[in-house]
Image 1 (spheres, rainbow, N blue to C red):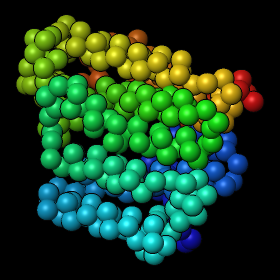
Image 2: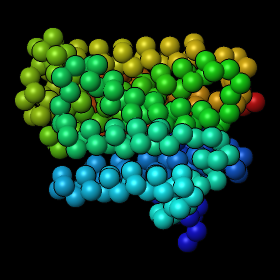
Image 3: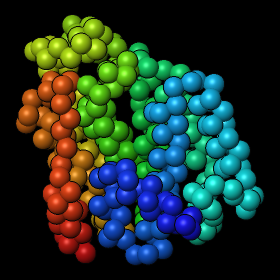
Image 4: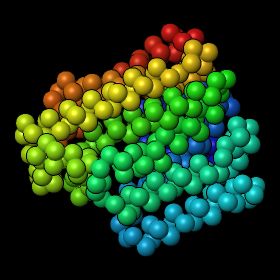
Length: 279
């Protein structure tokens, strides 16, 4: 199996909405973004699946060393080997890969977030930085596009957090800011015990409103001249925002006991429509 085949398999197995957007890219960019996403999956899986803190920390530290080796043209892992050409072709910064690892490390150290400022840092590291790297791969002519990528990343991560409230609670994780739980008179136990109360619904409606605001802001910030080059970002926005609105339509508090998702055909159709509109 070649490094690129490894990355493609890793990406396809994830079942992510991103996969349906990548397929519209030309070969070189598709391979680059697939390698980037495979890297994100590798380090995210450590935080999600490794229950021993010391082992997980050791694995993340190994990836820090691996990124250093990558930028010295000495990659060892299949994902790093697949990234070797893209980091040069698209001028991807090593610091951004380290930031992503730092974000995954936050998952090892925290299972609660005191306020949105702390959560925002997490969202920046695990999502906005990925957006910035992606924007460089897709290409842009106006640097305002980086602001679009930053805010769209926050929107995506907030959508993930809202969708996964129940699933995260069953792993003793609460990503919703604790000061906002208090504001809406929701206890940690309400979340952990999956109580679908009016208070929880109002709390989650508030989170949805915030995420919608980030989508609005990101779309306003994308310069007209970069709409075509950033089509994949716009496709992902269409898929994720549709998911967010499905959650809202179903009753936001339902995420405590069920997971809202979009079918493969619907994701492809949403992506295809955006591609055509921005051709």
